[in-house]
Image (cartoon, rainbow, N blue to C red; front, top):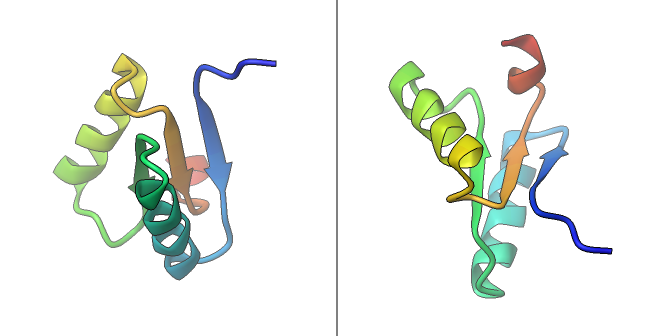
Length: 66
């Protein structure tokens, strides 16, 4: 099975950064979306994911809240 893109919901901001670090070491394209980012940064992350530049989006429940 081939997956083009995916969104991973995790329970803490710290876990977002831990997973991103691991995927970066494996050479995988991923982005994170947490409450630590300002509005412009969050918009940029969403834009990169929608355009396919980022294949994995790791996020907390901030994405579900809008």
